[in-house]
Length: 388
Image 1: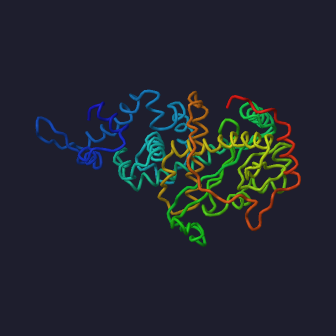
Image 2: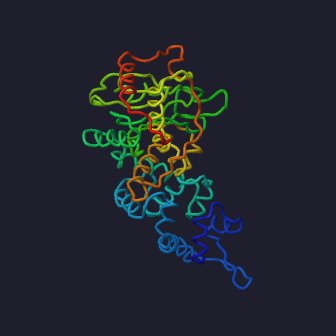
């Protein structure tokens, strides 16, 4: 197959039906020469498989490679180097190299291409694509867990300074947001129907995420039903429990920012409810809170844009969903470490509208400490700039 054709296959969103058929069954691949078909023997097929990695992928430009696999080539090589000694669940990778499996897994996570097409593209079977992807996610979350961590000490101070410089809010360590991740009916939970939205008749989990001032994920969780209210999901997470039980150790006197679906406290600040009667100081505070929240909303949007498989995971397991989501968040943080981090998309998507926490039957207007701190910060903010 010509090099130009290989590159076209790699970059194309869809394969031509005839070419797809050739790729789908490499053992019976045929070429047209002078109007005649010739069968490939096994040796020719081995060469085709080798040329895909040895000729096609290296021929991609730096930007093309990162567009296809979301990471730079040195980052992919780092993954391969660290994952090569690991024990893969699929016995000896079924004859595949670690590089082959890593690239196939990155491609699978980055696109919505059917698994059968991915298998054809990477000269393997659909079942192996799925098995290798699960192996890949397991190994990434085990070996790169430190890529998602809560900011402490110097990192925390850097994030606080970043939010102060970028949006004008003092004392903010992280911002909090969420989005929905669709799944098939889960088979690994006691009551699968808990995960079903009765209105849309679909199953989903909530991806709850905290980000620092650069949009880097500092905590993620994707284990709880998508139809739960955000405040309930937060309470079930590790960070949510720390905010309740030991906020000083978590935040050292600082706070996080969330939208109105979360409960206001001294450690989690939310916007002032706006009924059209807010004064200038409260409006100014709300504008800056919304600017801070755009950081996490932009990261969640960019995450689902870069790793489109999150829009349609096609798995019926909550644990596997959480594994895939966490893997994508780790890879996204790695992407932000590159020189192209400033180009990360920040376009926000439409999110599911939930009632504010204070309007829930068990809700409240906030703790006394939270009400007082929000008022103090609003009062301390300088006059709004005339430039908007």
